[in-house]
Figure 1 (cartoon, rainbow, N blue to C red):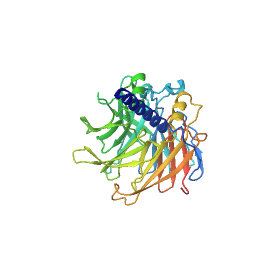
Figure 2 (figure 1 turned 45 degrees about the vertical axis):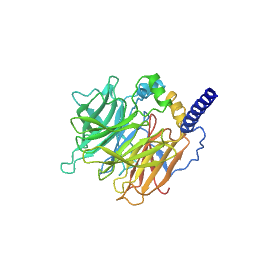
Figure 3 (figure 1 turned 60 degrees about the vertical axis):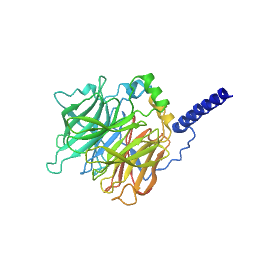
Figure 4 (figure 1 turned 120 degrees about the horizontal axis):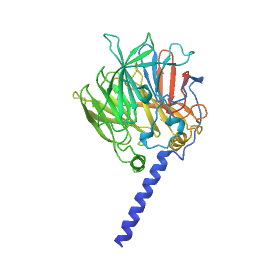
Length: 368
């Protein structure tokens, strides 16, 4: 009697877990394409535009050449051989294309550069621009710190930040010229154990704070913590969890630890988060059909849908209260495959949409 009950319960639990995974993978979804205005592909980039950071003068820095093999994916040979680069796009002249920045530094090895998350910090007093880039080096996870020289279109390497706590770094957000938060999207790095970790939905992700000297975990037990961003007033941290299909909103304490204050349920898998400087609104690059994203990793000729969501706060001064969630962009993948980030420039109403391993698109936002 009890044996049958236990077996029945076990079977139901396993079945429920499998159905949950299938739901997250998006096998049930249909895509109804729509754009916010005219869109075009930026031709220079074909190795991904995984993340985008915007400067106050309208210049956008774009990370390209991400190789996410550490996340347990089966990858196309072309993706395995991606070379990391940083590109520049000027929202003030959207008719122009992207420019590849020069990367210099005595201790920086360009051949081992695999760019993933990116963020910038502008010093209001000096005008200096610090650039932080997640680098998946073969021997270690690294966050590279550069100084941006606009005149020469050069990133001068300042230092490489390395620590054993950096297991599987995904994204970074800067809160000063020295300090930043970053996410680990998991713990395991081998193919077998990472896929088991993902399939079993083990909460191995976390958020780490670096004060310029030391690192410490400030949020733990996350389900694939991915994109991370800070509010314009530096008071809140936003973290995307693709498998949970949510955005976690954390309040920053005085000691830089985090307190979870709100969860935004999206019903789709968010990747990176762009915070609009003037309003604090969130722009999210999402992957609505995750199983097709995995197919795209295996074969770059197979496309996956792209999606952009907008979170508008009802009261920008109290971001943990009400919000309106809107879909700005949705594509079958034929125009733009595997979106990851959407950076919006308010004064020109321009929108850059990045991807994991393919192209970069620019759209004029007329309505959504």
